[in-house]
Length: 80
Image (cartoon, rainbow, N blue to C red):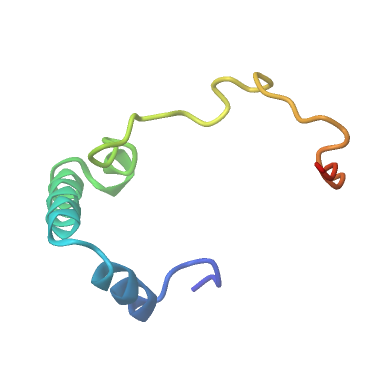
């Protein structure tokens, strides 16, 4: 298992912080994904739908639309 994957104990800590409504949404999403995996197979279901409340954004769609100035990390001026 890679270091960047969540362990079961880490996941449980995160779930414990969710509200009841958030837990129900998570369970509903998990059931939909499980159903898609069962019907479509794991590879097709991996990209089948986005979680509830998500917009389905695609990385890189507006590449270069925002830029950062060269002095981004410079200290801010002191306002008197």
